[in-house]
Image 1 (tube, rainbow, N blue to C red):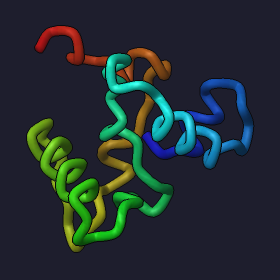
Image 2 (image 1 turned 180 degrees about the horizontal axis):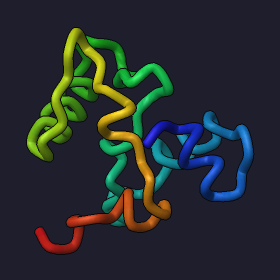
Image 3 (image 1 turned 180 degrees about the vertical axis):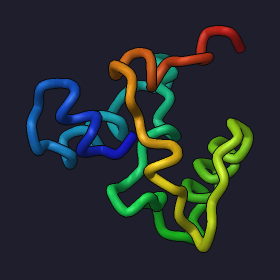
Length: 94
């Protein structure tokens, strides 16, 4: 999902930056699947050579996401389920 999609489905309208901030400030013990949230261009928002970028990229690839020229196809991976199902699907089966 994109930050804007999460905001919209959480009833926060156009508060994409609030979603980003909430994910960044959430304590690690919450184990949020933060890697599943990307920007509206289908790109990872961290600087390309940063450890955070590499970590998110690796996590998404391990979940079967394919990137082409640094982007994922939003039409292919776009959320069509309710927010809980989309973000947490398969998370607790690990």
